[in-house]
Figure (tube, rainbow, N blue to C red):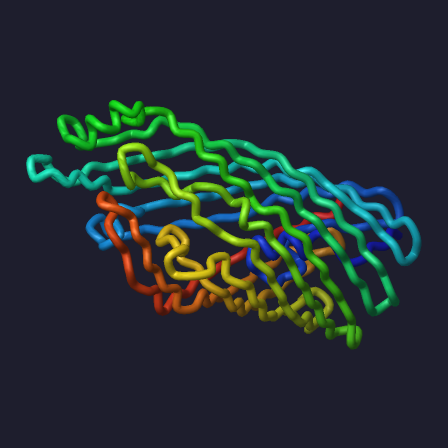
Length: 341
């Protein structure tokens, strides 16, 4: 009968997904080399404002979604040391809608800019697990950066015959192809697991994410030469603590708390496209082991992003945007299915 121990790659992946469930996918390590397959999302965001809100020249609607396939393999070298790794194929899709200010009194009103693109990127992940005792394990994982290069034609509307439309055309930007480079951040995580009893266990994680290399996904027209803006993120750090409780043989309950530092330092760096501050995460989940090879689970995370103040100076065309997001709550839901070959 093959024996398995706790997954090690799941800790880093869950920092991206924002959940403290240890059963949403990852790597199982066996006595001999064993392949595994994970399917999920690295990252996602979406905002939808009214067409005439105060920041319409910054963003009206935007979304950025990813879907990843991650085949992995793990091997138990000694009774206390296991290693694993895998490659990731990531599909990303970006969509943006924003109003364009046409300030001349002779112009017919606001223009519109629409942009949609998708790309496929590749990455890898590595992990090491140390089994200090039958009750205690410590794992280190690394997930590489994934580069996505989006290319699409910028589709402007209602700029025909306007001063701004003429200036954009003169600079070669009107209805031109736009390339946007976005880097899904690399991350390094350290996690620990300790079984207090045969039913109760504690888990903890600390995590670093390289958000300073995220890129320029904000699309708006601040002048006749510029149509993208860097979100100006800095690297973030995460700490989390969770508990598992085995109610009965097929049922496992999970709960946890996590804290993430803010990707921005001040209100003038924070974009309405993703108005995040320091985040407090409260998670709960359940897993049901259908049989020895199949498990299904669900988790919910409430993310409190705090009172995120915004104070943007966008120049003559975009104008200034000042305010705060309070409350600033995100609700995250996770469903997972695990099949062990």
